[in-house]
Image (cartoon, rainbow, N blue to C red; front, side, top):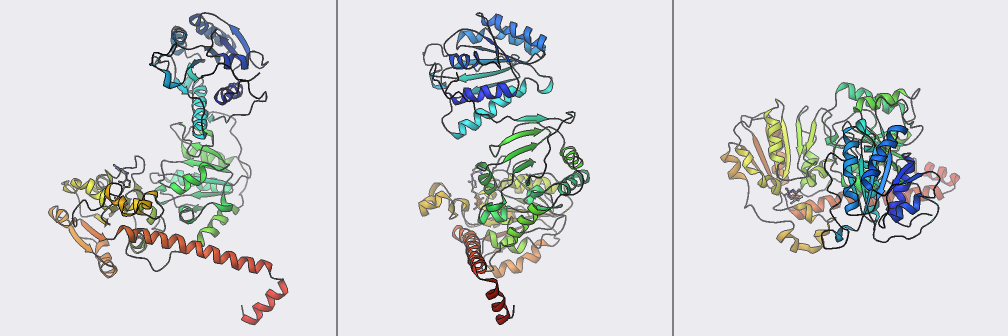
Length: 574
Ligand SMILES: Cc1ncc(C[n+]2csc(CCOP(=O)(O)OP(=O)(O)O)c2C)c(N)n1
């Protein structure tokens, strides 16, 4: 007999997958859904212990003997407090006791409801991890519950192990569900000393390299060995700082469309945030498996499909996974990506805009420069163009703030002997403008201030806020805040200032802007929010047309008898 509650069913499935067989049960109402679901299941051995204090110690004893995690479960309120002494003992001797307390919905707590106390407030030395498990109401709850359960179960044995706590919210005492238990997603951790690591076989792999400091030679060699050994495409954007074998700037494709036939079977991710909304949006609901490689060993389930964590240095992972197979793999998946990306074209005719500037400046940035992007609009537009492989790229997408882009950039430039470029919008620039007064700023600084007089991000035709039209300018896009220009402030801080109001002036200014100078330089390019949006719209729509035209061409080709095709080719001489 199994409860209907989805979160409890998930817990049951994971208890089995983590091989937790022994459960010490104390009497009460709130945990009936759990108790009824396990007591007749031959997988579990249940022990009845009335006193919760004794139950926790009893579990410590069983665990010592069977050398495996043991669960304890009780009802809500004061019952849970009595777990503390036994859990404290378990914490300091690193015994894996899993306390499953049960509770009302969070809205009951502290409202003079009976038996509803703050059960989540456990002393820090009673559990390695303590998680709250809500009743599942939608898919987001489902992902959250799955992750939290895994987190607590994993903590029983991680880093030497110890007790963990799961607080399960349950409103109805009992509702019977299907007798066949569905398999919940288990997140398994692997470490270098584990002898058995999973095999990848012939899967189509998308290796996503998030925001990353530039790679060491050892890391690059390992990633390339991995790329040779497997059918992989390496998804990067500029801030991945990886330009090795089999890399694809996939955002170019996803900005104008979707994965189409390019969905991977397995995503392996390394690094931090990529600031790439299309990627996350496409992968979040896809049927894929996700493996994460990170030294911190933390869950980062960005695509709601995490199944494995490799807690080790990146180069170790890639080298071990490369060494696990003999010979080279085919390149099909990478070639498919390349074929699709090569179809993306950027139209010649664009208004003066962030995209237009990126188009011309991207090819001129000197090698070995540092290149910073402010978030969203700048990052997005520059991803449409290549930059020299020696250029290192950065963006504050971890905290996703417009508040410190200028300061971060200037900090790096002060410590660098190369040229340093920043692409930044006006709201981000004026937010952080006092940084221009920092004394040590050197003449290697080049700031492109794209002044569209507001938060153009919110007036892009793809943004929901643009549906409010110019009303968005009042408080969402915050238009017209900072006067006419940054000229006075730039000059005041001994910057050479270039004013660009049209394309001709831009053409004239770019060669000056990229050259050595005796002072730092700020080039202010005046665009409009509407032109920034139009540029993006032109790029996206021209590619949609192209795909459609190609589709028609393809359909005609495919439906034409081959004799007729050769005849026609002969007539038109192709
Ligand atoms: C500190 C902080 N406040 C608010 C936001 C929300 N936000 C994201 S983009 C943006 C507008 C940026 O405008 P601008 O720098 O002028 O660039 P544009 O979009 O016009 O290219 C804002 C306010 C944020 N990311 N960080």
